Image (cartoon, rainbow, N blue to C red; front, side, top):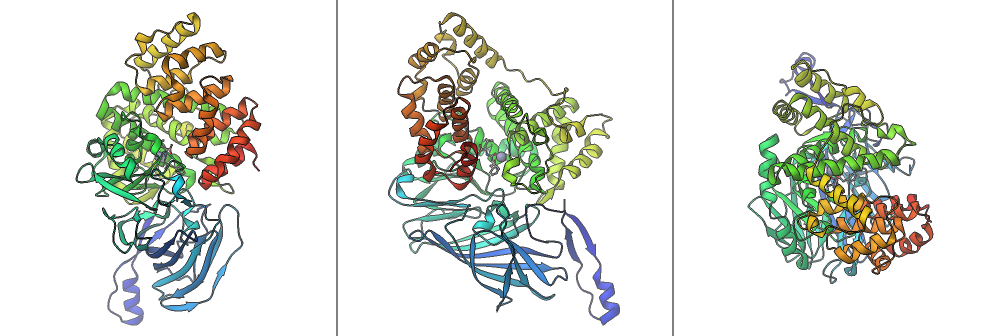
Length: 616
Ligand code: BES
Ligand code: ZN
């Protein structure tokens, strides 16, 4: 949390200097931060102006980052950098010498710049290098339309420092504006006010007037077009994807309305989504005003658009009220999953929400199993000092966070819980909170007020799942389980029972195959339902996982798995499949595929799969 201290310097100065009273000066107090070198209590950036050129031939972003700063009597300001080539630093317009600290493999290098008490601005001229972790440069073959190259950035958690020298802590918020020059056949978009058409000269101007943390600064450049869904929502995509994306996301405006009804005004004016090429390492990334999304959510039937609800929900939990450090990551993701499922319930009803809640519960059980040797990582509040924040970003934050909030909701009742959440977002808007502040706020404004006792500390500071977790029930999923059980027992699949199934029900069906399902049974299911050729990426992903685990090779599935892994870079999908190979002692096969697929992956996916397969 930022505690605002009002320093009444005016009286003091008047006495000393007989000057005119000065305005009250606000100083923010930032808490200890394990993943940034910045010392914001001493000197902090407040606004960024970027002037960049994007060079696809050399695969370099270069230019000048100019910062307005607030100096609280420090003699230097420290920024985070990693793998950047810094060529010049100016302080209030004068070139000056600067120092780079020791290189740390996770955190990068601090950049120290001498300043004095009157310093208003610093300007850093730099180039990105071929080691940049945030940027992925794609050749035309890696895009949907195959004619132009593409570039996108991924900032969360601590990668922004690899394409902009910056104070890269979620506690530090800045406004920004940018001028970006790209090849004139391409369009550039950012997490900011965006163009809707290409310009002739390839020069684009951006403005983000609400203060945001560094991990939310984002840029994408490609041969993209815009199509509005409503006045305040729309999609960017390559030409061949645009109409499909537009149809898939046609409920976007309804989602914004549902979200506003729950937790208050949408504070970012515009809510657009850009559909990126398939190597994008996440399902979605909540860059403000412009969510970045994987094309694998386009299923043709809106069945995977919960992802849009999720990224939209971050406009409150995460972007408006931000986790103070990555140890508090569950505040971003747990709240967002809770909020996402509430949005889905508002739009599509309770049964859909219950299915999502149960999928979440199963994800949690799987994650607890895979973390059984590191119980500390199953706590909500983490201690990631000395580790890469990415290591702590497991399903625990999402699914245990969700279960905690859902259990709380049932304990206090929805009406009180909603009022509480609404006031929490309002109170902390455009600010940060940590776990301890949240607990205090919860105790004062919800629990004590209503005379309710709750084992909050156990949920947050202890491993595993407390006994009082609510049981989530879904009639639809029970029906799925019965159909599966009957099939396993009789070898006869009740096709009529499956006729109306949604993709979520199919996923549940496939994920819950018993360990001893036979190859013949898999073959029969594939013949009947053609899972190997499903157009729903979630269904194919879990089907491929089962195929790998059970040694099923029918219907050319091996070639399809390889094709999927070389085309798609979504980390969750990719690691699920490589884990399946590993768990069935087929690492050699995995490595053959990985060698081909690796050049198509973004650095965050590469890092995860390298670790998983001990590569190289
Ligand atoms: N903010 C996350 C993505 C992220 C997490 C990036 C940690 C870097 C570090 C995003 O909101 C997210 O959770 N995406 C999920 C979507 C899902 C839960 C609907 C994903 O990518 O799978
Ligand atoms: Zn999220």
